[in-house]
Length: 400
Image (cartoon, rainbow, N blue to C red):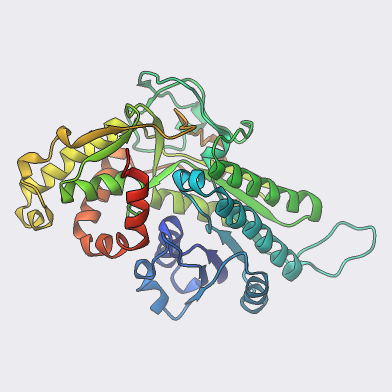
């Protein structure tokens, strides 16, 4: 059955990958409306081919614009609303927390209210509210709402899957972890940055609309994403870009912070499965089984970029330094940011056992794909890494 889907933030990193996933997976069985304000991390070049499709419509606008949001939901009549739109960089939230509260909390509330008004059926006094069949509001969230699993670095050890998860997971061997604790859907929410506080509040608003008004909702909380079209403020694309330019590679603290890395295509598949088959009123964690320390990731990217340069001389036109200078000497340690969480790690047992999802892409496979994509799409990197981005980069790392 054909589905109509409103994707907010669809010109950003994960949102654009989700649009691409929907079209590749469902083709003309989806009608997509993309709403994006095209702020510093949103780029129309990312979805240039998609918005030329007859079943994709793009509207530039803010999720906090109530008249616009209300009109679009009434006119487009989406079956699903998937809210990717958010201010999403912790460092930016530290310098300007108000912006994050306005977009991530008030913007989400605007969407929720418009969905409630559009989908609510005429009711009977004294009876619970009822909504039109097949409607769902889906909130994209983050594991950062849970806070940090530890305050000090740990040592890697083998990760053992539960029998229930092991029956679902295929082709993922030699998994590792840096601790015994993991985020589950019942882990208390203890955010520690303005960004994670804003996402926590948004999640709680979504659930409040479900509990108070009966609105059909789901939430997914993901670990750190990486892959194509990643804006070069984040660790992985930033390291690749700086290597090509011969710049130092800034690493917070000693680089001991651990993140669970999730290839973006795996994340998109998980979102789609929750959207179509997830239980209303539920939260699903989506993790990657890829725990790595930041410093390990930086060193691996250095080695991989050098390998690509040595094996394929055509890539050397992108380089500003000799190939032999691509080494660990590029690493520079910068002062750690305030409230930097030490370790995130997700337990995806719920989505694995209920819906059959698991992260198919190992980190070694995913990071190779990501490095190659960045080398093959250098023009895209250059197009987004200018203007407001350059000002932001200089502000973030210039005095450290």
